[in-house]
Image (cartoon, rainbow over all chains, first blue to last red; front, side, top):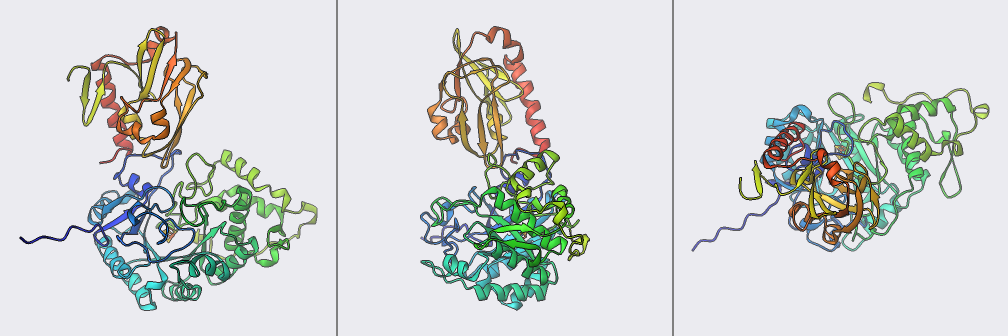
Length: 372
Length: 153
Ligand code: SF4
């Protein structure tokens, strides 16, 4: 008797989607604690043998206990759905969608499957589409092909912001081998292929880097018209960094603010002072300018690829904190009440000189305002 | 309709008890001065996949409308609001250790707390009872949640 092979729940026929995406596309019942519009759909390639990388902080790492299917990615369960069913629902709810994103994993089939999934999406849905790429699987031509198929932005999950940290967490680990130089090569190719402000670099705050390390990276990326997108490290239970603490909220808020000042207001290294250990000591800028940035609430929004209207489109609500914990990044513009909380967390007086001692002129904005 | 349940769409509701229509909690008198409290199936579903349950310590006195705990789901956290005034005299250890049981068996093993109360006669007016009224209210709520996009399809 002929026996058919059991169906494998793998890409390109199957993908995982974030719980927030599952809720907005009505695969799962549920709601958000606060009321805000949400339309960022994140999907993740799915393979039974999983991601071939082994990053120390990641919930999908190869040497973390559990099968790939059991492993959570950024903590909350990612439901498995059929790609065609997903595309059907994207088409049905497209008016509410702001940004779509395919997260690759490091796997031999990831490139071909990503192309196939982009094709299926693009046949039915025109919402802007990003690919969060897996650099070891890519070449410049392959990036060009993503663009030709209809992706308008790419993200690169650098995560660790210095070469030594990258090597310690992503290269010299049991089944590691990811290369810092390969990531930067892909960032450069991406910048050439996709253009200014169409590439972003995911950077994790709280892996052991200093504030200075982060600011140096922000400036370096800004000068190349590449976005730095901030993520707050959130320990994955059972990962090798499962017991590593998160960045304190005050540090996280200050890093959000500093990144905004660099990216949007044109600040450079000369506008920041650091203690010997690299911790931010002061912002040397007119207080009014910094206060204005804080009052806008914009520095504290989730960093994510924009929607067609230029506003944040990928907002990952409760992506790096639990609903019962204080917001890390806000998937909506913070309200005046939120801003009160943010100001207390920032403790700005500790890092901003009094008005009498601040220089008169500020830096010049570096990025066209329409880029949001 | 069968015995002590009524069916509304895919939901089977027990009608041997009272319901707080605002917070989707049921109240079942278990003695003259004691009630058991739990979620109805819609109340638990709309929050999403449950992650954690926190209940007020034994002995806590709560007024109707005050929180007797909180519930956290994948993307939601909110208070558990007392449907009647009383003193917390029992917590469900099964629900505390495995909140998924609240979703799987909201009328049985997934109950939340027991309250000692003498207020039920006075507060009964805020609660719904009777198969017909319960079914009517529930049908409206399902429709409203569907419009809001909170229910899976
Ligand atoms: S920020 Fe952009 S690249 Fe990163 S997950 Fe969101 S859509 Fe994808």
